[in-house]
Length: 98
Length: 143
Image (cartoon, rainbow over the protein chains, first blue to last red):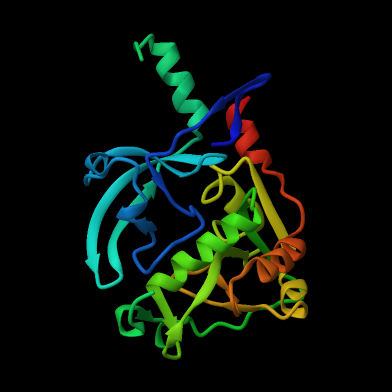
């Protein structure tokens, strides 16, 4: 994993739930990746919220669906608005224990 | 690597679109590395084919419009907002370096086609893409 700035002056290590190239899109208009690139398969369920991408460029995404293709199981991801830093700030602001 | 028939053929799916390569800027969320380019190109190769052979390539977005979601600023602010840094290069520079830009799936997505997808070719592509530059729209969310 690579260090990533989450707040000015701070760095942390981001562990993604599923590796993806967030530049990738297919005909659905969603980001796609392979289920085989998930760290924990149980996290990858339609409607689930996951951290996707690369450790140095992650994003918060919603799992849209899983589609069986001959090359493997495709996971479609919807990029959620904002940045991962904003979600982190939201959790801290709400005082949610992590 | 599997049978090419397991892949989705892209030729008939390419958009009928002429890329104004002298004015268009190509954007790719980064930071990219040799390892990432090779890995992402292999992922494309695993799923897609072009003219009956596996398609090696990496995804980019082209700033096709002066404003709106497919503009330079529109892409940075929305589709690429999660990226702290992006690579950006004039389309003509990529083409001059010998790379093909394929109008894949929905506008303004493109795929930079690679020939062998090895580290040498990835290094060439990385050099053309240039250094990662700050995405000020991401930073405006962070601050």
